[in-house]
Image 1 (cartoon, one colour):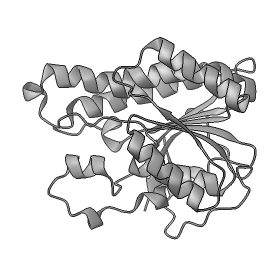
Image 2 (cartoon, one colour; image 1 turned 90 degrees about the vertical axis):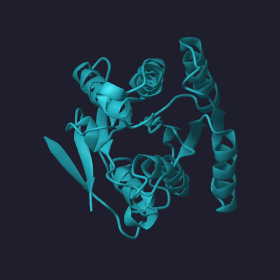
Image 3 (tube, helix red, strand yellow; image 1 turned 120 degrees about the vertical axis):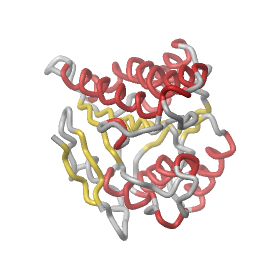
Amino acid sequence: MTLELPFVKNPQPVSGRLAGQRLLITGAAGSLGGALAEMIAAEGGELVLLDSDLKGLEALHDRIEAAGHGQPGLYPLDLMGASPDDYTELAERIRSALGGLDVVVQAAAALGEPAPIGLYAPQQWLETLHVNLNGAFMMTQACLPLLRESAGAMLFISDACGRSGQAAMGAYAVSKWGLEGLMQTLAAESSEAHPVTACSIDPGPLRSGLRRRAYAGEMPEEAPIPEGAAAAILSLLGTEGSPKNGGQYKVTT
């Protein structure tokens, strides 16, 4: 069952709503990840921002600092080449720096090369699945002990093509189907002894670099700005929000 999250047309951060919350965002240099990071910083959250794009992370850091919010931690990591030990080290550094973790937003994604299955390049298939699904698994496994201690939440950024078949989206779509399965499995394993809430969110069409590559014929201004979806996602967090374990959310305009 799909749960609706209303798109926020004029998002206004609620100061202090996320005070004391420790959050990790992967894919933070992307359009949605960056919008989320800036809003979370404005609401008082303590941030660790992860991406393979160091320049993008530094630019995001500068925007957050210029806005007068707390300085986020930056963690450059390429999920394509990262080993299980790299993820373990990340979790250890977060524990050392923040003392724990309350929320992980897994927004990192590789598009690959959209093409029909019969024409899809095998190496591109393997690499896209590795970043989007294997990377998400290793990130989940490394962060689980921290989230269990805080009864925290794992939010997976999904896509409509990961819930209903869509032609020519190839490994990207299949990886999102896998991500939905990872989320549901994690949700089913939640218990009183290991209380972690897992859910997935389809943010809908967004004005982003990934979408421009996937839909080259679409004018950029045709897609909504990412801030509206980011604000919708933030409604699940903080004192006012409570994501449903196993919930499959969709941001609706």
